[in-house]
Length: 304
Image 1 (tube, helix red, strand yellow):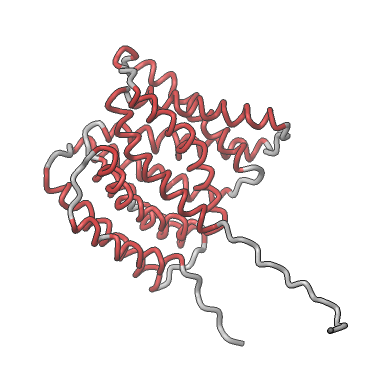
Image 2 (cartoon, rainbow, N blue to C red):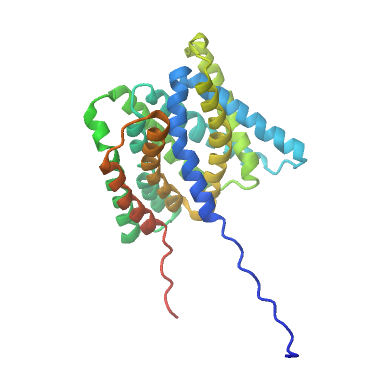
C-alpha cells in the first residue's frame, strides 16, 4: 500500500466554442428558410418590426425578472443602438425586401460573401493579419459557395431589384461586424442584444406602418411558427452567439462560418420547403469546409 499522497489531476474544462459555432450556424442558416416563409405571409418590414420589438421586450423582461443590473454605460448603449440599426434594421430590412423577388439560394450566396469583405476591412482597420493561408481559405469558401448555388443563378428567377437589395444587406452586416470590433462595446452581450433589437424595432415600426399594408398579413400556422423561430432562435439566440463569436474568434474567423450558411440553407430548404437539391450542392461543401479550416486554424507558434 502506497503512503504517497494522492495528487488530484484537474479535469480539462469543457470547450463550449464548437457547440456555440455549431448552434450559431444551424440557427442562422435556418433563418433564411423561416424568413422566406415569413415574407410570403406578411410584408417584410412589418414582420421585422414586430420581430425586433418582441425580441427586445423579451430580453429586457428576462433581465428584470432575473434581477440583473444594467451593465452598459451610455457609450456602450449608444454603440449597441448603432449596431442594431446596421446589423438588424438595415441588414434584415434590406435582405427581407430582397427575398420578395430573389431566391433564398441567391440571397445566401450574396450574404455569404461577408467573410471576404470583412477579412479585407479587418486587415485594413483592425490590424487582423491577412496571410496566404487565410486568403486561400477565403477563396476556397467563395468557390464552394458559388458551386452550391450557381444553378440557381442560371434559372433566371431572380430580379435585379432583389439582387440590389441583397447587396445592400451584405454591406450593412459587413459594416456592423467591423463597427463591433472597432468600437468594442463592453458590458453584457445579452443586454446589448436587447438594446439592438429595441433600436431596430423603434426605427422600423414607423417605416413599416407608413409603407406596408397591415391588411396583407395572412395569419397562418406557418407564419406563426416562422415568427416564433425568428424571434427566439434568430434575434435572441443567434445574434447573441454571433457577437460572442466575434469577441472570442475575431472578425475574420467568425465571419468565415458564414460560408456554411448556403449548404445548410439548401439542406433546410429541401427538408422544410421541398426545394430540389443537386449533387453539386453537396460536393460544394468540401471546399467550404476546407476554407473554414484554413481561415480559423490557429497559426503555428515558432519554436523557441
